[in-house]
Image (cartoon, rainbow, N blue to C red; front, side, top):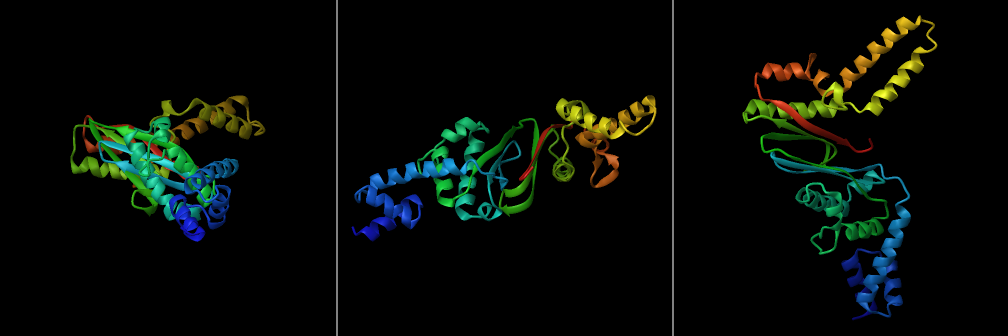
Amino acid sequence: MSDIEKVKKLRQSTGAGFKDCNAALKDANGDLDKAVEILRVKGVSKASKKMTRDAKEGVVVVDGDSNKTSVIEVNCETDFVAKNDDFINFVKELSELNHLNNSNIEALKKSKMKNHQTVDDNLVALIAKIGEKITIGRVKTFKNSEGINNHYLHTVVKENIAKLAVIVSLETKDNSDIVKSFGKQLSMHIAASNPLALDVSSIDKSIIDKEQELVEEELKNSGKPAEIVKKISLGKMNKFKEENALLTQDWVMEPKKKVKDIIHELKIPDLKIKEFIRIKIGE
């Protein structure tokens, strides 16, 4: 086999560039197996240097069905790479494995991909090949044997791949079209309204404390009496909580009503919102 043929074969098997393959073959004295190992080590070195950079682009991928639905976020540095075929093929397979591993991130990283290499090894190789930082972000799996899961994708890149994804899990024994339609609309509402929690009491305390600080800072030089300031502060905080809790948000499709009002109007006694997630790239 000629040197050119070896370089070509090495490029096909590793995805590395011509110069890197040529240099690796020289270092390996023409031995293809050694050259592959040299490129792998170089790839790790290249990848580790790139991991100090910011990765604020990427995609969100959804997998599964109405009883078990998974979502995974994979970040990169540029939107150009987020549409790259190698990146898209990687995230598709990664999403399937994430679903199988119930979003256990440690188990996912050790899982073998179709090329018989682990997710971690494939990630390193992809970073070295593409030349950007790539990271696995947020993951979640919803199991629902007593209800139905719905999802919504916004700014779709390819099938099941988008820039924003919502999964909402409804608890009910009713499997009617009414419930399915509500689940779809609720997913779209969550995408648009970005609730922080299901209800007021579930909003993270650190978020409440931060908002309270901002309100107090805004009012401290108002010149109003302390008693009035306290009432205004309480009103602002109550409004903040209501606007950021899903059940008390204005229903996007009919803003004069709250989400909880829409649920009440459906007259399905056992219908509850079990849980939800909203993942948007860049947030």
